[in-house]
Length: 323
Image (cartoon, rainbow, N blue to C red; front, side, top):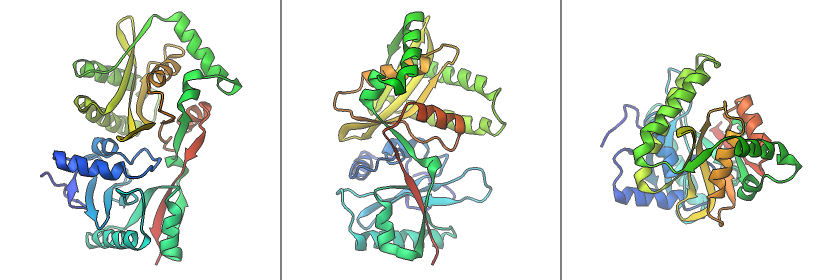
């Protein structure tokens, strides 16, 4: 078993056995967290970059990882403990959190709980009262859309998106296909080409961000053989010009889909609308919601995500102990 120098919990996400995958899935599927970081895949692809570790403590699964990567000191946080049953018992949850807090403190790390789904934040307040301070982090809120809205693009609110899509469909001879192991390298080459173009227009710190993002996408593509991914590419004149990769939010349900990656060549007007539309059209009829993740506080990304008119923002909170 590979260990990080600063492992918080007992296990990392490398070299998982089939039994461990089944165990982890049972917790990630056990509750509708409505948060893009609460899947096995989301933790797996960032496992090394964010030094993510896990441990079952009492009745719940605890997951910890590095928060910001910009500071020299390693600052860790824990996600909200995951349940297998769909329920939380306050006494047992407190016991789990208190134990996790001791583990953090024994390792000399400040204990915080982050990425707390809005539905679970009140539970922490009930348990700890004025011992904790809850803070809403707008930059981490996930954007939730109705799949049918992204398919139909109907109504005044999405009229401009529909116009862009219509232009693309009239103007370009494009094809859509899923990503397969044999074209994974071609997908990576496209991503490197697009990121290289973007870097010329972005601040220097984006070089690191895009490099980390590319590594995470490589990890995603390494999972093509598992059948867990939902993927698509658009080709124009035989070349890949847009890519999208997602997954079901819970392996036991088609109700919600997470979109982890959406990249396109902006030289083709309407291509972003086209890749999003083509992807959503091919989702099962029983898929109701599409989670297009957070905007990380980036204003241009926020404007784009808001322009698709989400039905709600899945709020996330942070909890810090003050006593």
